[in-house]
Image 1: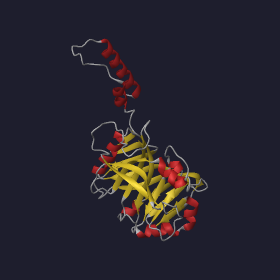
Image 2: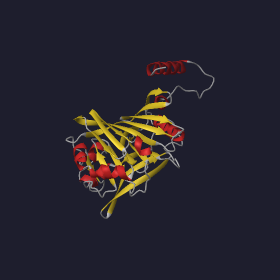
Image 3: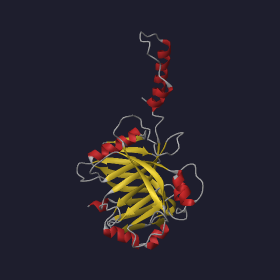
Image 4: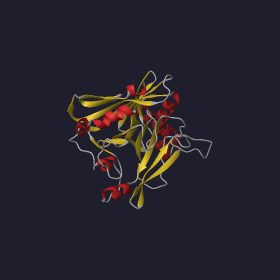
Length: 313
């Protein structure tokens, strides 16, 4: 049954409930809140923010040594608080796009994350609600275990600290593929750039580092291969946030995950879940191919494909 048919059916039910008689004095037609809940309209808006992948020492060394490629591909830096240009001694490198960014971590990263581990970060926004420390995600169902844990992240600026975001996640002991969904604080941008902001946007956060003179514009699609447990978790998180299932081919799900597409395939053969491929949009036509250890990046017109599959062999 398509959306239009569902809508007509619900309207008919509403009309019948208004006209019909009932022996129960408490029986009432659907309220506006019930209609909103039925159609999942009042869920938090979700958009993709960034991802990270921990690569092996060879791949990371090749990535950081190839300065000519990095200079043409994207603005790259070492992150907050100063967005300093990435150099060969950095333990992590941030690839900046217009709305998204990619974080490449070496094996000696400050988070002590092992090679092969990865994470996907999303931004949330509630309609008619500004950021505050008590904010909560609006899901299609209440009382669920999904996105039930949270953490507030503060960043130091000199002698002070400023709240950057409040992130929600599903407790997933032992996972190698984290997912989190965060409300971001516009006051953080004020501290970062010195201007007044009433809303937080990904473009504003990245405005100091992104340039369209470089190739990389942003992420379009992620290809994930997951353990059964992670496959179910991520699919359910997306479902509870009202993300559309675009198609299902065998057990592979293609989901409109905010402003990107994620393809999730379950596997009983992998020891841990992983980002297999990353599809990116380029600002200009390019056909360069670069092999950085176990990471292959191949440009084809305005699409750039990052292939991490050799990293896990």
